[in-house]
Length: 257
Length: 240
Image 1 (cartoon, chains in turn orange, cyan):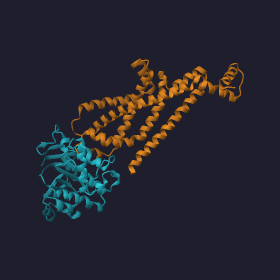
Image 2 (tube, chains in turn blue, green):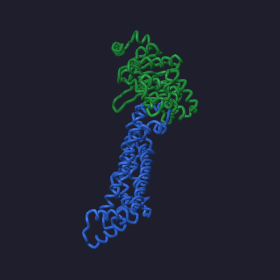
Image 3 (cartoon, each protein chain N blue to C red):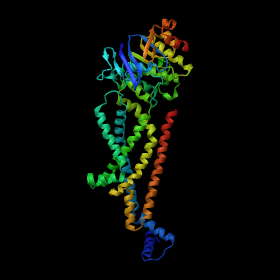
Image 4 (cartoon, rainbow over the protein chains, first blue to last red):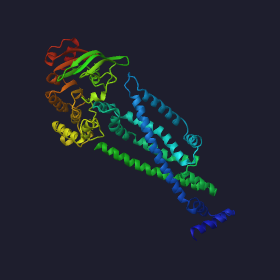
């Protein structure tokens, strides 16, 4: 019996109310969740969107995070007693509000607001990625700020004493050192972001969970698609955890040279 | 060369420097000694504005650097500084440590900076360490590199902030040797140190600081032979 035939026979029996052996039932549910009409391609599509969304949101989050962190660190590091730079003060205040609002509201609610209040666009996936990036930027900025402050103050002093300006000292001396310190926390943020892309499904962003739910709805059977999606997320996270561990070990090796 | 007028510095309510006026002349080797907490490091760090004075003015070759409109980065390019904890950049090779500032500030092209680095490294006997990282060097080697890094900017004055205090005793000599050579070449130097031997041998003037004041100063032989202030006598009796 070829697989499709088996599925159709047993499915018909199931619909008519007959009891099947457990393995026959399992086969039917598995087949309709993943194999029927090449549905596995939909999961693959979803994984593609999930990875793309993670990458784009992370990129956006890191760019935003670096800008916010550098401005906030620069503001805090101004020489005490001197008149503060007003432009820096303004941006510092704006960024503080940004971090507070983003960290103080649920990500799902933010996505709903971006999609249905602010943009009202049909490009739900892109809007979702944008929302994720904005959200991630707030968290990443705090991670980076912590990393920048963890670099020994003598490094900044040494750079400045050589006549380098603030930005050059940051760029060549402080940020590269901060990078190593923040890598574990950034890895964590990356993994959280990867899983949070599943929230795109609430605004019809077509990522992995969106397809899993759609298939479940079509089959009147949620367990197999949902558990299947969970397994895919788990495998993705395990792969990236392993890669991050490798990267960290490599960076640490350069310390002991 | 550096003129300090009525310099005061306080951290919160604590007055660290109390109305100091002093002048450093070209070619002088000023050695600043005193007990810890006396303000000697703060005084030195004020000279290139790593600390911003609460009041008073500092003038470097006719430019008032305490003026907020002064481009302090330009001034610092002419004032080398060496720190107690070396502060080499651990993420770069020794060569990059030395060439970064001259290249980024537009003082030299990369090849020229590399040549300067090689020449300076040869001078302190660390030529073969050019492609090593700071973590691979001993404390004495790091501090010699730190001096070279400052020298690569071709500074007019060098500030040393306790350059040998973080070193193992056996490594102090090699660093002082480099500083001595530098002094013999006529570099203007301001050195905060606890090395009395160095002060006596190399200094052209010794300042004794305590409680934010310069209590006493003299040329080194007279200073160590006949200290006048009771506080100076007490300090010297403890360290000599």
